[in-house]
Structures are given as C-alpha cells and as structure tokens.
Length: 386
Length: 224
Ligand SMILES: Nc1ncnc2c1ncn2[C@@H]1O[C@H](COP(=O)(O)OP(=O)(O)OP(=O)(O)O)[C@@H](O)[C@H]1O
Ligand SMILES: [Mg+2]
Image (cartoon, rainbow over all chains, first blue to last red):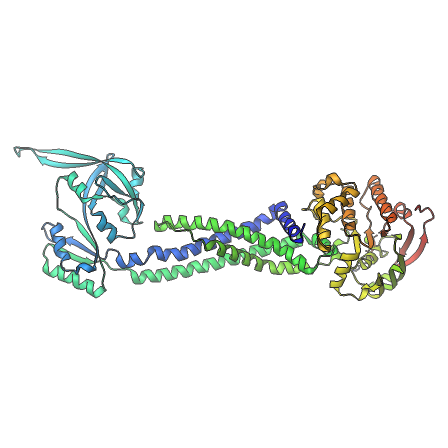
C-alpha cells in the first residue's frame, strides 16, 4: 500500500467513523455552498431573464378607442401607418369577452398569437403557444382556479342575447366550444387572470367580428421618436388614442444593480459564517483529538504530516460539501427563478467546479488556525497518564 | 558500546528535581525494569529517553548520538526510526481498526504494508481481531495492538511505561510472555512498572527515588 492510499484511508476513516462530529461542519459547508451557487446563478441569470429583450422590445405603446366610434383592425392599421414599418416589432390586438368554463365566469381575450408573442417576449409559457384553432393559453391563476393541466379539454361557453325572428322577444342563445389547453402563462402580473385564444376562435364563439378593446404595440425607437408617433396618431385619427407605456429601463437597471450588490453581500456574509462555523468545529475537533495528535507525534509524525492530515479532512469535507451545495444550489436557484421570475434557468457547468473550489478554499482557510494549533501539542504531556 | 547512556541527566521543574544527576547505561539486548514510587521521575526519564522531552542538563547518548542537543525535528526522526513506545493508557486511534493502527506507525516510519501489519498482529495473538475498532477490543487486546504497533518498525529500543498497569493478571502474563519472546530475539527493552512481579521477570531492575537512582541490580531469578 502506498503512503497516499494510507493517507486517504486514515482521513476517510476519520470522517466516516466519526460522522456525527463532522456532520455539523459538512452541513455548514453544504449550506454555504448551496447559497453560493444558488445566488451566483441568480446573480447571472436574473438580469438575463428580466433581460435585454424585455427592456428593448416589450410593449411600449397602447392604442385605445376614443369616443364612441368602432375600434377595429382598420383603426389599428391606420395608426400603424403613422409608424415606419421597420420600427414595429409586434402588434397585439386584444378583445375581451366574458365566457364561462365549468360554470365559472372568466374573461377570455382574443388576440393574434404571433403579435402577442412579439409584443410580450417576457411571457413565460409552460407548454406551447397556441398554434392552431381550438387551442387555449390559460393564465396561471385561471389554471389553478379550474385545476386544469396542460393538454386538458375545456368546454368554453359564451352566452349571447338575440332577438327572435319577428323582433318581438329577446332570448339567450349559448355557444360552446371544446378547446385544448396548449400552454399556461406565467407573468407574475394581471395577465395571469385571463385566458387567451386566437381572434378567429373568439369571433366564432361570439358570432361577431372586428371589435377590439385595446392593441399593444412594441415599437423600437427613442423616447422622442415614440412620442412623435403617438402625437401624429392622436392628431390625425379620431377614433384612436395612442399612449406611451413608460419604459422602466432606468429604474429597472438601478434595481438590478442594487439587487446584484445585495446578492453579493449575502454571499460574502454566508461564506464568512460558513468559515466561522467550520473553524469552530475544527477547533473543537483538534481539542477533542489532542491525545490522538500527541500519539501521532510520538509515533514520529512530523508537523507537516499532522497539518496535512487535518487539512486533508477539512478539504475532503469542503469537496463533499461543495459538491452537495452545487447541486442543491442549482435546485434552489431553479425554484427561485421559476417562482419569482417565471423562467427556468440553464445549468451552468462551470459553476460546479467553481463552487467546489470556493468551498475547498473557504474550508482550507477556516482550518489554518485550528490545524496550526494542533502542531503545538506536546506528545509527552498528552500521553502522560490521565 | 551501550545502546543508551545517561550522563548526569537532570530535569528540573521550578525547584523540583524530577531527575537529579542520573547516570545509567543500557546495553543492546538488555531487559531493564525501572521501578520506584509515584513521583520518583520514572515517566520523566522515559520521556527523555523516548525523545519526547529534553533534560535540563546532562547528556543522553542513544546509539552514540547525544539526543539532548537535537532539535525537535530530528528528535521526531530519531523517535520514529529507533524507538517503539508502549503506554499504560494504550493510546490507539479510536476510529482506526487494529490493523490500521499498526499501519499508521509504518506510515510515519516508511511505507504501510498491510500484510506485515497483519503478521505483527498475528504474532501478539490478534489475527482474528485485525478489523476491529479499539472500542470492540478488551484492554488486554488493545495493549497487544500497541505492542504490535511498537514493534512493527523493528525499533532498536522498546520503551514501555506501565504497560500492564491497566491489565488483569491473565493479560499481564500474555504481555510479559511477548516481552520475553522479544528479549530472546535480541530487542532492548526498558519497562517502567510499579509491580514487583513485572520487574522480577526482567534481567535487571533500576529503582528510582526522588529523581535519583537508589538501586541497580541484576535479578537473580532471571531465566534466559
Ligand atoms: N510538566 C511538569 N511540570 C512540573 N512538574 C512536573 C512535570 N512533569 C512531571 N513533574 C513532576 O516531576 C515529578 C516526577 O514525575 P513523573 O511523572 O516522572 O513521576 P513517575 O515516577 O512517573 O510517577 P508515577 O508512578 O505516578 O507515574 C513529579 O513530582 C511530578 O509532579
Ligand atoms: Mg509515570
């Protein structure tokens, strides 16, 4: 057996056979590493998620009907003609109607899915965007209220009042249509309170075409250019008002910077706490094992080999704790990301070695003082009776 | 030439002379028992001979080298290479098995060799206890593991401080039989003891009192 094999046999025996003692230190390292890898993941992914796309291409202008005139595709097209076609990133017309599903009143929005997708790139869809007629996108709250899952079939009912043939009486007619849940929408905002379907489906259900409630536009351009487009629409078109949605770029990026600083601070504090915990445990371990250290010295162990054996134990703990923490940290970041930002994150392979290396460094640093004190132990005193 | 020679060795703690101008020679292959009342300086002397402590004054020659002048680092090396230690309290590493405890001494000395460690355990009658942890061994068995460990590197000098102090009569006899065997093979043994029966089986008995040697005589009853 080589010396190295014996070295590992000794340190693993120490960790495995004295596990209750080392578990505390391992736990501290694992928690530290979890928070480290979790927060670092969030640190890098949050800005990406809230992202450039969202800030630059999200809906930033809305068109609303003005006066009593009809507001339909023609008005929207007229308004769009005031904006250079190349600047229009996406147009999402919306029409809202009350429908019922499973006897529950729900607001259904008809839209053009491609336009909605372009105007609201930050929407997080669990499943797929509806692609065909008869498919639905459910806001998350609605999905929870109806306790429906992806792929479920829902019966969407719409009640319309009609006059009978001789115009003497009103009666209620009910249209219904079976539709499939293609996706569930998570935005963290009020969008989750609606269901979305293709405009054509809503028109078929309500037996009426053309009416719109609002249109959301994503237009690229400076604040001044946007204001110019809005002004010219408002000046030249009667039935439409154009309003700018204030972009939050500025405040958003300050918030991000502050958030990142906070994350960094928390990480540093957690690592410091981990270090204190590991140092305390190692000090206790060294005290507890004074006799053993004295014995090893009596058997001819040099200071260097004592240092390496204890460091070896510490570093092995750092390795295992770091590995554990890297995995838990990813799960933690994923959970935060999905729940808070409605977005899943990709695993960063680089984070695994980084977390492990940082854990090992932190543990190593924490072990230095306690382990140094181990070399001061005098074999004669320790072995003397008691 | 003597293996070990103490010349005017004193160890002074404050105004207490734990050892007071001790002169002693031990030849290669000798079996010496050190006796004396509690506090007479037996352990102090063992620690100095075992390179774990330095005398306040005097010379300690081990194999012709004056260990009272060596640095802590070379004392560690000399202890590792030349001395086997056995203690009253056994002192095994509690999370290592019997064979691993023996291999630890090999590890610090040169290279661990599990087969050889197992042979050493077999020699002290513990072949079937090799994979047990110290907590799973009786006191006598633990002390035998310590003996196997002390012997594994073929030390020139085996030092034992009260090796049978914590053992019952049966186990004491097992240990003494092993010592006797070692003596026949030519190992030099210095054994500290309170117990006249343990001292009797040695070749020679040195008695300490108040840090001084008060008697040094060959045992008549000694059987080669
Ligand atoms: N580190 C120390 N500091 C101060 N005094 C010490 C120290 N070590 C030993 N002494 C004293 O030196 C004297 C001799 O101690 P030593 O341990 O050698 O006795 P001993 O003969 O081994 O006794 P016992 O049979 O009880 O083991 C004692 O009076 C003890 O109190
Ligand atoms: Mg003593």
